[in-house]
Every structure is written in structure tokens, then in C-alpha cells.
Image 1 (spheres, rainbow, N blue to C red):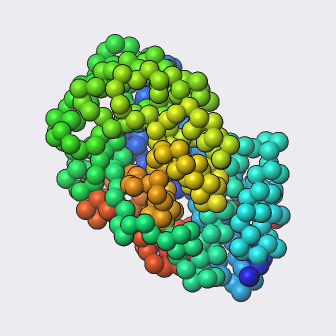
Image 2: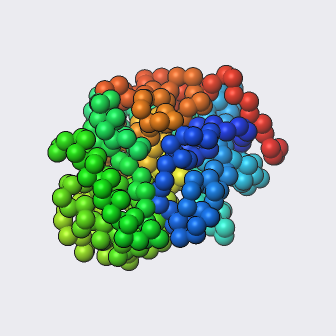
Length: 392
Ligand SMILES: [Mg+2]
């Protein structure tokens, strides 16, 4: 097996950064739609999530190079701070390793960063390194990632769409639609009424059978979430997502136990590693949503998926474009996947990581076919400018 001889962490400047979903130009729905957040209780942060800094990190690109010159790469949210950790800390656990030593690389990076890591940015950085090595390994073997992790369970992956217009996503062929929840506890009874009105309006627009969900982005309390669940009962929502702060495992259990109808409780977009997901799964949630670029990478996601599968829960990764498609199409616990509507008005399909790749697969009629090209099967757009803020 070829050894890895170099690792590089690169960043870009600019308003549209691809892997950091929230680094988008003004006017994009992800920044201009009213969305409830844990900061909504502060009037100065009730507008765009950019007001509290949701887009401060940006994208980081990790390249790993083998001794024959083959280069694998991957991306995550993390920007310059992630580049610092990758170049100054994680590099030593990667350079010199055979490209197939994914387990030992994850184990060393994770344990070496325990004193400041475990969750958040350091695990984002580890995730990008791990996915870059998977891409390299596929290129060295001439094999797509989906083939290396068990082969396809289905030829096309059904997709649901995340964005403010499930009614438009339905017309584009998606199997379901998930909206950001506009209002949280700080908006009181009027906010609750408007949330429920939106649910009613979208159910009316989409008909009785299209699956609908609300994404609550950690904004609610258990009591508010339970009130909302009860109010959604007439509208047959498929799930309610990330109602609570990720650390409130007892609150997640409370939602599972006290929901008044069989709406699924979903969470995990901001959970990390097998240890975090063990805690989350033990609350009884029906559906976990690890992000392959945040949760520890593909090496860790495969373990997390196995835990969900053993408990009969769904594992529907958050976003992550082709990286998630390669995983999803192989997974028994992932009968469908998420597509983030990244067109500014959520009215058409554009590549999820626009403008990063020159050849990013997109859903057609709400289904994705995964590339047979080696690794994750994407190339970087040639017109992006990258810089390397830290040299080893
Ligand atoms: Mg979400």
C-alpha cells in the first residue's frame, strides 16, 4: 500500500464557500429566511443567523498526497482554525502512514486531541482528514468509495429536500421536504400560531401524502417542542428535528416518551463520534443525522450507522453532498438521504456544494445516482483560489 507523504490544509476567501453551507451571499434563503435559533431570545440576533456569526468559519480543504503523486481531498466547515489543527497537530498522524490505515489514523487523531477536542471543530477537522484519505485510497485502488464500503444496496438513492419551499421540491420530484422552523419560545403564542399556520399551509400545498418535517436548529425547550408536536398532529408531519441543545439528552428522552402521536424525533446534526451517538441513541430518538464532515468522518460514520442499525433506527446523514451519497447508497439504515436546496430561492436543483466542484452529482427526479469514478468521484473547480495559511 502506498504511503502518504504530504498533507495540506487550504482555505478560500469569498462569500460563497461550498462546504460551509452558511457562508452564502446576501439574499440566499439560508441567511434571509426567519429561522428560530437558540439566540432568538436576544432581539439583536433575531434576524439572519449571520448576525451571531454562523458563517465565520468558512470551508477548509484537506489534500493528502501519496508517494506516487496521487492526491485525495475532502472538505469541511472549519476554515483557518481547522487548518491550524490539521497542519500543526493532525499532520503527524497521517504523513508516513499507508493510505489504508484509516482506523489507526482516526484513533490517534481522536485520542491525541481529547484534551481539547471530542466534539465540534476538532472533530470537523479530523473528519475532513479522514474523508480525504478515503478519497486517496479509492484513487489508489481505482475504486469508488461506495464500492470500498460494501457496495450499493439500491441503484438510485431517494432524496428529500431541505429548504423553505417543500411545495417546489415536490414538483422537482423529491420524496419529502423539510422546512426551517421560523419561530421559537421567545416569539410566544403568536410565534407558535405562525409556525402551525406554516405547517397547515404547506400540508395544503403538498397534499396529504408528501412527507414534511420541521428543522428546529436547537432552538426549543422540551415544553415548547411538546406543544409544537401536539399542534402538528393534524398535519401528519414525518419528523421534528433537533428541537433541543445537543447536550440535553434527558430532554430528548422526554420528547420520545411524551409525544402525543407517532411523529419521529430526529437529532444528531451537531453530535459527534460513536460515543456521542451512543448517548443520543440511548434517548430513544427514531432518526439520527450525523454529518460525515463533522461527526468524525466516514470511518466513524460507519460505526455510528451500525449502532443505529442494531437498534432499528434510521441514520439519515445531514447534507454533505457526494460524501453522503457514497455512504447512503450502501447503508441499510439510510433508505433515503438529504439534499440541501442551495439555489438562492430554493426553486431549482443546483449542486449542494456550489461552487466547489466541477462535476458534482445532483438529484434527478428526486433521486441520486452515485459516480463510479475512483474515490468520492469529484474534482475541484479550477477557478477557485485557495491559500495555505499554515506551513508544517
Ligand atoms: Mg438540521
